[in-house]
Image (cartoon, rainbow, N blue to C red; front, side, top):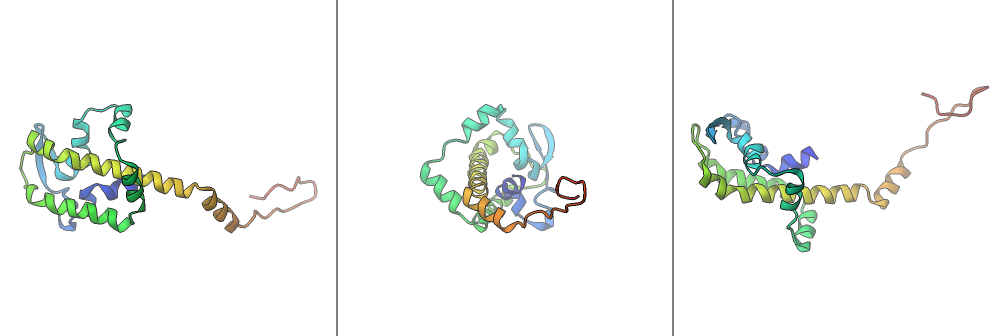
Length: 158
């Protein structure tokens, strides 16, 4: 789950030289932070949503979007995040104070990345737990070796 989420956070797929914008210090809502943390959690936290509200907020994709997002390759996920981070870099000035305008103009990007990550994770889990996948996986696992010793009940040895 964490890995899928990280690939959808633009700062996780950005520039090595500033450690994914971890070194770009700024102020957000009068508190010190860095650009990476702003995109990791601070803008999400600003919405002040409870768990049920979060689920409702990110349940807006059409059936066509779900189908497309789940069909996209891992490289597409990464490329989307990289493109976003590249657009954000000119706005990522050390010491800047992104305010309400920044938040309003970028929160839709955050929301979309969360929704895509959730839908893509659901697709991966559905695939992993499909009957066909589980059957194929269990067929490839050899049965446990059972040692029968006098007086034992034929349980697998440890």
